[in-house]
Image (cartoon, rainbow, N blue to C red):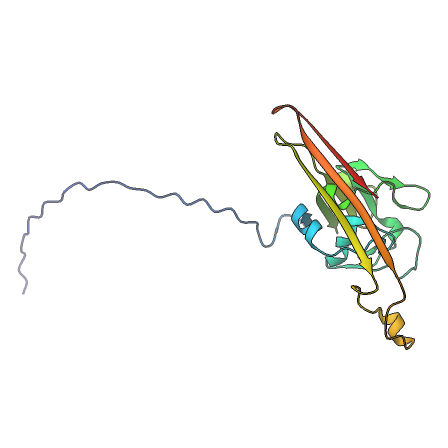
Length: 208
C-alpha cells in the first residue's frame, strides 16, 4: 500500500486504416417540407395492372389511386380524374415533363402518354412548391422515355375479356354470375436508339 511502482512500456507504431461506407437510401420522412409525393417508375408502371379509362384516365395516371388521400370522384363534380385531398377533379393539374397538359374544355389531361412510353409518373399533394401554383388539387407529372446509345424497342398487347376479368360488384348485386361479353385488344410498340452517340437520341411509340 501507498507505494508507487514504475513500469516502462514500449509502444510500436501500428498501421493506420480507415473504412468509408456509402449507403444510398431515401429518407423515410422529409421533415423539411409538407409536400406529399408518390413516384412510380417504369418497371412499376408496366408490371402493375392498369384499368384503361378508369376515372376517365388512361395509362400510368391511374396509379394515382394507390396514393393516400386519393379516391375515385364517383362521377361527382366537374373535371376528369380522381379526387385528391377531397377536392373536385377540376382542381387537378396535368403536366408532361413540366409542360402544361391541361384540356381547358373538360378540365383534364389533353394528351395521354402510352404506358410503355412512360419513364416515370409523379403525383404531388398538399403544400408543394410555388412552381406548381396552377391548381390546388393533385399535380400529375409524367416523364417520357428517351433514346439511349443502344437500339431498343418493345411490342406489347393489353388484353381484357370476360374470362380473365373478375365479376364487377355492380353486376353481382343484380344477380349476375358472370360478366357480360367484353373483349379489348390494345396493341402498341416502341422503338428508340442513337442518332449521334452520347449527344442525340430518338424515341418513338405507338399505342392503338
